[in-house]
Image (tube, rainbow, N blue to C red; front, side):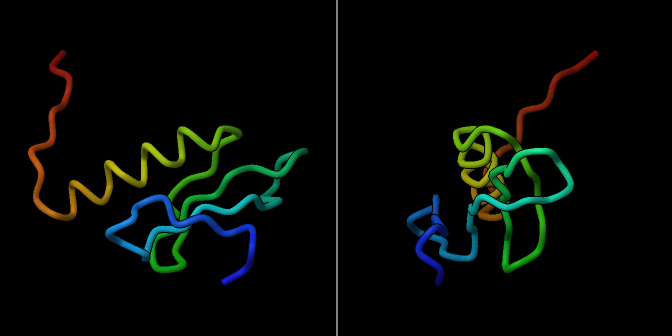
Length: 68
């Protein structure tokens, strides 16, 4: 594991966040699950929230969605 890699979900080390250059002018925070790209964002907090949400969904948490 590289020193700049963060594992935001303590109970699931398969999620990682790392700053990477991925086609944008500046480096972005890239969230990966088992090495597969999930999302990129300029904000660490957004990547961490997505990781926690994805982890909860995988464990069977109730997903609340907006109705039109």
